[in-house]
Length: 128
Image (cartoon, rainbow, N blue to C red; front, side, top):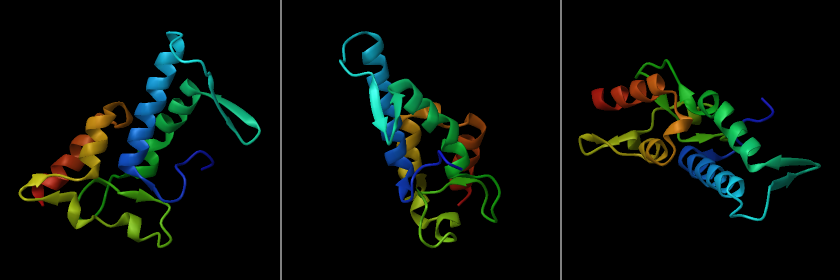
C-alpha cells in the first residue's frame, strides 16, 4: 500500500506524529501558524491531508486481529524480518498490567484506534 507507514515506523511514534500534525492543522485553521503543510517529493500535503493519510492507514498497518494469542497492535511496521512484526512481544504486558507502547499510542492519539480493535488488544493483554 502506497501510503502505509514507512519501514521501521513504531506505533507510538506514528501516534505522536499524528497528534502533532493534527495540532498543526488546528493551529493553521485558527490562523495561529503560518504554514499550510509540507511538500512531499513533488506533492504538497496540507497538515489536515497528512493527518487523514495517517488515520486512514494506521489500523491496517498495525493491528493483527487474529493470532494464536489474540488480537494486538504490533510495535513496528516494516521490519527486515516480516515475522518479527507479527509476534506478540513480551513487553506488550508487564507487572500484571498492560504497559507498553500500544497503550502510550492509545493515550496520545485515541482517534487512530478502532475502538473494538483497541478493546480486543487490551483484552489480549489482560489474558496474558
